[in-house]
Amino acid sequence: MILIDADACPVKSEIIEVALRRNMQTIFVAATYLRLPDHPSIKMFAAGDAFDAADDAIAAVARPGTVTITADILLAERVLKVGGAALDPRGREYTEASIGETVATRDLMAELRPGMMGQSGGQSSGPAPYGPRDRAAFKNALDRILTRIARG
Image (tube, rainbow, N blue to C red; front, side, top):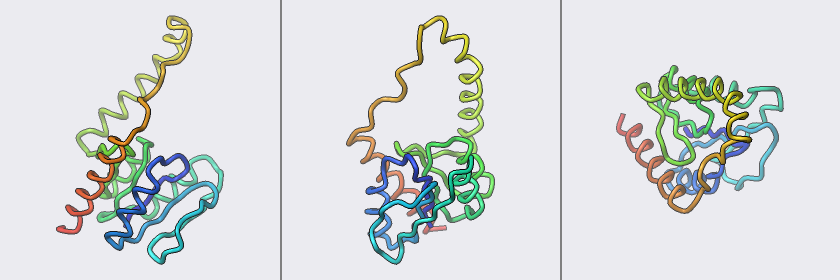
């Protein structure tokens, strides 16, 4: 099963393409309903707009054999703790080895950000624009993880 933290997910069409090709049960979880293809293996769950409602809904059903697509590091950490796989929209798989470092870096940056604001005069430019290479890397990584899970 593929679970998607769908509110800001830039790879919805790529997920649908892979899911349909593999006939995988796929659940998009968002605050409100999204328009999705009418197909029995593609589902939508509206979790509501409470803080972390979509994350909580995904974490409640994540288990070994599921793949969660999210850019949310803390959700990825929750998924890994229950034995699921987690992948970000740029095709980077979160692992037990990398998640601790990623969470620590995130926390450090949150602490440093207020002090840095005065020095730089503003926020950083953020991540690089999302492009065709990112989409291809994502699809390849999703296929690789699904193949690994299928082999057990």
